Image (cartoon, rainbow, N blue to C red; front, side):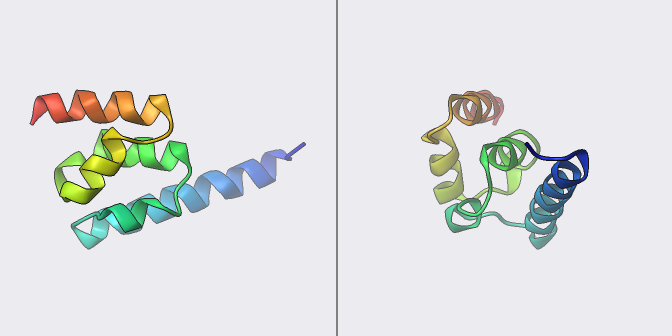
Length: 78
C-alpha cells in the first residue's frame, strides 16, 4: 500500500506535468500518453481550449469513462 508521502509525490508529479503542458500553450494527443486518467481528466476539464484536434479526439475517445464524459461536456461548451 502506498504511503501518504508516495501519494503526495504522485499527485505533485501529475500536477507539474499538466501545468507544464498548459504553459506550453497547446496540447497534442502525444502529450496525453504519459498522463494517468486523472491527468487526462484535468486536461479535458481545465485545458480543453488549448487542446488541438488530435488531443480533443483522444480525450473524447479515452479508455476511461470519466475522461470521456468530461471531454464531451467541454466539447459541448465550445
